[in-house]
Image 1 (cartoon, one colour):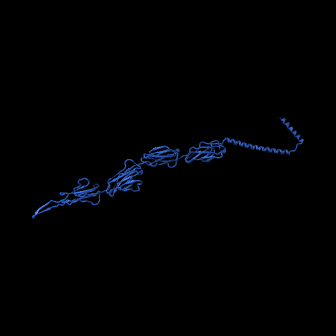
Image 2: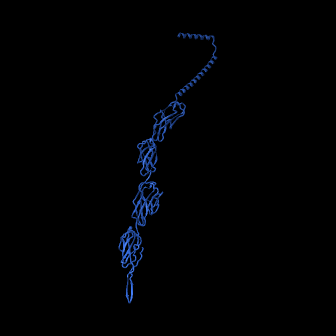
Image 3: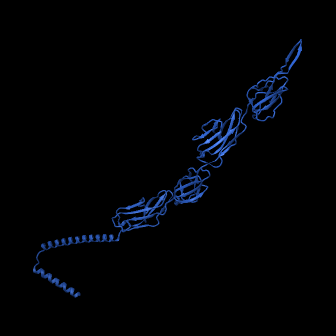
Length: 464
């Protein structure tokens, strides 16, 4: 509390004569000193408390007091020695002074400062207007009153982002929920390069030892290109031909993305919903599918493999060589069928119950006439089986058979000729031996024989 400077005034001079002497009496009245001011209570003044300002002076005659506030307004606040605040408010803070006045003049006190301590009672926030695009710089500002100056803290959805008296936040790379970044009083919250994760509701809190106040929430809507789409297929287990299948695509984007499903270069679906539905999926639908999500800020895509399982389709069969089959040569029969999972193959020959072979390829290494006939194959997997409807006839070359028959005939004839020659030779040998051992005929015997022969001849002639 400062006091004013004192000033003195002299009274009028009085003279009179006594015993031949002239006496002058100088009457000096009390000078009007500057009044003194005091405040009660003398310590911290807190908003809502009772405060008295007192103006006093030792003026004679007694002075009349008037209170003023140094705010440029000369309107008196009070004409009493005391200026009373029954419930002082923050707006009552300022510098006050009083004047003391009597017929001798007016004196002014030194001013006294009144500083009302109070909790924050108003708070405001501001931010960018228009679109907020990912990667740009963004600043949020918070301002508040309070005495002593409040600490300003920025929050996002109940997670502390910034805490401090200066309120300055410089966003580079930080997980908001982990730590307090900076303290200050200017309430500035700055994103150097805002990200999509920074979207949300923000508010500022102002607080000092006398209380706190929160601002209204402010929504920060960060717009950004679609993130990498998440793709899935339902059912997630094995997909069987004929079943219903749903492909789903979703992507984090702001504004919402438009989705396109395509297979190879063929677009099969476009829309705001990323779902593509097969009512009855077929084997031709298997393959790689792509989902693209796109908005005005960019695009992104993911791929998905759809594996459709199905029973073997109608098998096809072939024979190699496809020309005439020469006996003794190698013959290869091949069976193929479109199937998923891959088919197992079994070979059959017409009119035979037991399989001839298993596997996609059936090879006859030394073909003979016995191998000729009708063949067919069966393709089988876990989803079913299918037989070839056309039978494959394998026959040896006819010219080869004729040559074989002729060759066999010649061999048999040669064997028979050899046996005949051996028989003739043996017969000749036996005849020679018999002639050597027979006795010579006598004339009598010859004659008898001749007569007999003659008789026989005559009988034959008679019969004729």
